[in-house]
Length: 324
Ligand code: NAD
Image (tube, rainbow, N blue to C red; front, side, top):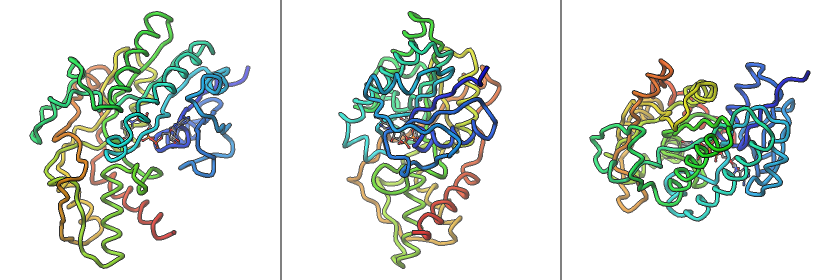
């Protein structure tokens, strides 16, 4: 009998690449990574993994991706940071083709489990208007008023996964990721998120001698950021748990963007003049993850300190930039 096959859709992306890497390091079964980008553009690829280039919006490609799969992790989506999701709402919503066809293909392949990566963007905007936040509990997603485009697709797909479980008996598991950061992800080009963008801007300011950094908004918006290693642990625990409803997977260490900038300045050993761009996309005013439910279910929650994760992320981005 050969090992069970594990499929990671979006395996060429940030979280998918790390997931393949950690499954491989733990010797977990046969692995198949699938992404629409050419393998040369994947953030991480491994020669001993079956790497497939497929467009998972297409149903037949999803059937090819899921053939013989025991476990399927769907991390494929057309997404990016706030600038991308505010300006590409239709593209974000078209990821519904990936979610739908992957769920059908996982069901028809007879997979044991299907993991779906949802997002904190499913939460209603009117619960995120203050920087001094009340952390978001899972039930705050309803009554629904998700982030336009990206968030609505996630909320719809969450619900579809619930009905695949109820109606077809497919064991679906859904995590609502709150901002994930780390190495081997986007740090330039418009799809990067705040932690990577700030690292890049600090390095550029130093390198170019401008001594200045542009910050989107007034910098007093609050967020929490989860280091990739916590994300991977959470995915594994949730996938193999009996948690049937969507659950928060995020850090609850809240910071303002100004504090995050100060942290990166400390890591880099510089102080920069701040220029605030108030008309730039800035997303909700404040957001944090309420981790009551994940603690109750798993006796665990993400706990890697932002400073520790940012040091590693900064070092990686610096290496990428100086290597270029
Ligand atoms: P990413 O953009 O690095 O990875 C997504 C991958 O999906 C990319 O490599 C992309 O090429 C691939 N993809 C896009 N369209 C595809 C298609 N048609 N067929 C096949 N592959 C396709 O993003 P990520 O940060 O690794 O995010 C992974 C998942 O987690 C996504 O579903 C995302 O919405 C979700 N998520 C991420 C965060 C975060 O902070 N990174 C937060 C909330 C939710």
